[in-house]
Amino acid sequence: MTAKITFIVGSPRKKRSCNFLIEKAIEGVKSELDDVEINKIYAADFNITPCNGCDQCLRDPYECPLSENDDMPQLEDSLLDSDALLIASPSYFGSVSTQLKVIIDRSRPWKMNNYQLKNMICAPLVAIGTRNDAAGGVISDIINFGLIQGMIVVGALGNPVLEQNIPITSLQKYGRKEFLGKDETDELGGIVAHNLGKRIANLLKTMKK
Image 1: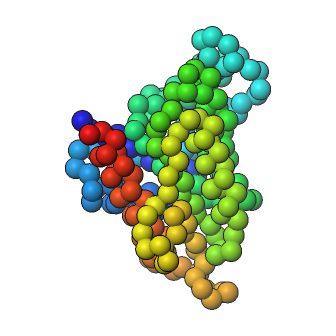
Image 2: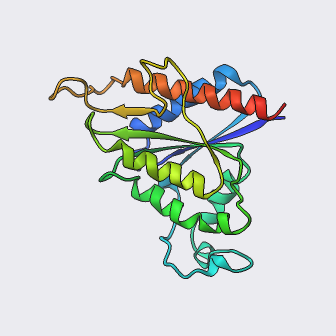
């Protein structure tokens, strides 16, 4: 049975650090899984109205009235049948991007309508500017989203000493005033993202036996 994995690039800058992490994760998936549908979407491509707290989604038919006039239905059609969801976001003032936060807020009907994302695998990836930037808030936002939606939150597996569990890429090198050049990438961030893709692929192979 074909596995479907959705990757969300949560940055409005489509071809930068978040996209780099997603591409490395896709490489990891493809290294372990042949029968897979890759669904890559950009949060910035969707015109989604911020939640206004009307609470209509708490009542049957558990739908948001804002969806009549924005792109939330298209996003739902694209990702609700996925087996795994990997979300990459930049750190914007210690939290996820505006584009991704709107999606998270508007996803409330998915929970209210019998947890439509339940048992889907979820994993965060983070892009930061400086090496000691606030990645933790972004990680927490995405993990909380997954837990609230009843998803299975996982991290990467690699060298237990040298490679962390959450893919994080930084524009800053190890010197205070050293930054990545135009054609340079963060090697460690790419390795961990690749490891995450492999982990997701192997979990899906086990789950689909």
